[in-house]
Structures are given as structure tokens and as C-alpha cells.
Amino acid sequence: MAKVRLEEIKRRFNNVTAIEDITFEIPDGEFWVLVGPSGCGKSTILRTIAGLETATSGKLFIGDRLMNNIPARQRDVAMVFQNYALYPHMTVAENIAFGLQMRKVDAKLIQERVKTVARSLSLEHLLDRKPKQLSGGQQQRVALGRAIAREPQVFLLDEPLSNLDAQLRDDTRAELKQLHQELEITTIYVTHDQVEAMTLADQIVVLNRGKIQQIGDPQSIYARPANQMVATFLGSPPMNILSAKYTNDGFDVGEQLIRVPADVRESLQLHPGQSFDLGIRPEHIYINELQRNTQEEIGELFVEVKVVEPLGRETLIRAALPDSTVLLNVQIGGNVRFHPGDRLSLKLDLSQLFVFDSITGDRLYPQFNN
Ligand SMILES: Nc1ncnc2c1ncn2[C@@H]1O[C@H](COP(=O)(O)OP(=O)(O)OP(=O)(O)O)[C@@H](O)[C@H]1O
Ligand SMILES: [Mg+2]
Image (cartoon, rainbow, N blue to C red; front, side, top):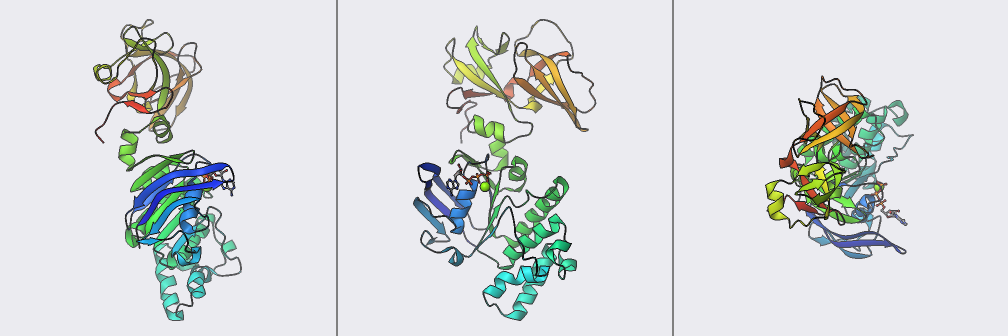
């Protein structure tokens, strides 16, 4: 086991910068998740750590050792790819043992190791089977087993669950978390799935266009997103974003005014005509009991229901502001009956409002002391 440190890592492909300014240190034994949309550079970072890719500039340390010029096979890392390939002619046991055999580990030791790994991944009863006699989830676990068996210093996983169906993905995700708690091998996990990121990570690194947007534990990234990209990427359904203009002491969102909370007024220097992006999560919007036809209270919003999605425990309503194509996601309790075309008056919990710079996307409000 070892800590992993990246210092100003940059990777260019011809004229395209895939990643830059990548700096972070993962303490020994922690589970970190790199998350972000397709093409943001997640795999490039992982492959650079594995030694399958060479950094254009910057430094990579595993433990205290500078790794830039150390070949992949000497880095003592194990990587599991999205399209894991098992050896089809070998049994599960032989697949798991493969890395150890290549390293000429003692046969008896290999046997013991395979047993332990198989037990921790619930593969004991499958050891004599060939890969094609296994389900997708079982194959996935064998691929993980093959990587774990080597007891690497660092475990690198690139979207390892993406080929599994939803149920299997949930189960394997939980097993993976449990496994990490037992083995405490430093793990770097790449995914574009925000649920996986939130549920697995000690720390999340959010990436966009090759750059780090924010690093933090799941709760604080959700509660204190640094910018609009992070705010809308983590959380499902995502945070609502409304373009607004400051006018007449309120935020004008298409002919309707949202009251400016006192704190916002104090922390931002507001000028009439200034544009902002307002953010509010679906769980912080309520439906007013009394339905009126005119806006009586600032902070109230009139919308028209477009789509109703019952999810059992809760219902998701997608509603549009008048004369606007922007849909607001509203998350409410399970047993409500609304229909497309219904007009609703919504109440926003303004204590949960975010204000973003409409050009840079940076969070302007709230300002936190971290
Ligand atoms: N060998 C290469 N040559 C040129 N460009 C590359 C190469 N590898 C990656 N890139 C570019 O670098 C950027 C980052 O790619 P990367 O594979 O790291 O993204 P990713 O975050 O893993 O995306 P995904 O979620 O789709 O796997 C992309 O714009 C990609 O097109
Ligand atoms: Mg990738």
C-alpha cells in the first residue's frame, strides 16, 4: 500500500491538451473517485498513474518514489479496465492466479492466495469454471480478483461496473466497498456515474475538460459545490439552473420575480440589469397549498406541469415557466396526482439558493469559509 501524489501533471496529444494542472495527494489506503463527463480526462489520469501513458510534464509519486520514468510493470499497481478480458481457456482459479504465476510466486502460496481472494469475492464455488460459464457480474468479480490477488500497492479501476445491469452494478458496488474496507489498498476509481462517485468515495475529484473543478468528500461537494458544473453534475435529478436578471429588488426569471434573500444582498454587490444563474435543488422546491393565479408573494413561481414521473417513494415533476422552454425538476412526496397542463404555484426554499456567475459559472453565493 502506498500514497499516490500527482504534481501539475499535464498530458498533450499533438495539439490537444487532454489534462492539465492535475495536482492531488491520495493518502495511503484511501478510496478516491475521479468523476466527470465523457472526454474530461479521467482515463488519461489513470493510465498515467499506471504507466500506460507518459505525462508531458509534471511529477508522479507512488509512495515516496518518483515514477515518471519507471516502466508500468515495475510500478506495482493493478488496473482493471472497463472491458476486462479474462483468459477464456483458463478456469477462474487460473485466471486469478495468472499474475502471481507470471511473477514466479511459490505454487503453494498461489493456491492460498487464490482461495482468500475467491472467498472475499464470493467466487469459491466457481473456481473450476471457465469464463463463458459465468454471468457478467461473476466475470467482473474474477477480473477484480485477478487484480487483487497480486496485492498491489495501488488499485486502479476504470469504469469497472459499466457493463453490468443495474441490479448487479449496485450489488458489486457494495461488495467493492466492503472489499476495500477489508484490504485497505489505496484505490483510484474512475466513473462518469455520480451515484457511484457519491457512494464509494472517501474523496471525489470532479473533472471537466481536463481540469480539476473540486476535490472533497461526497457530502461537502454536494452541499458546497464550487461552481455550476459541479453543482449540476452531482445530484439526481440535477440542481435546477435559472437565468436571472437583477431588477426591482428581485431576480427576474422571465417576468416573475424571486425575492433576493438578505444574505445575498449583503454578500453580492447587486446592480440593476446584472445577470446571474440561480441554482436550486429539486428537493428544495415545494408546491403551494393554495393555488392562486397571480404572484402574491415574491419567491413564489408559477409553472405549468409538463411531465409527471411517479417513482414510488417520490414523484418527480418537470414543469416549465410560462413562455420558457426551461424545465424545473421538482421532487415531491409519493402520492400526489398532477397532470400535464396543470398550473402550479411553487415555493422555493430560498435558504437553499445558489447564485452562480453567469459567465464563469463560479459560485458567488453562498460563500463558505472553506
Ligand atoms: N491517444 C490519444 N490521442 C489523442 N487524443 C486522445 C488520446 N487519448 C485521449 N485523448 C483525448 O483526451 C481527452 C481525454 O480523454 P480520456 O479518455 O481521458 O477521457 P475520459 O474522461 O476517460 O472519457 P470517457 O468517460 O469517455 O472514458 C479526450 O478529449 C480524448 O479525445
Ligand atoms: Mg475513460
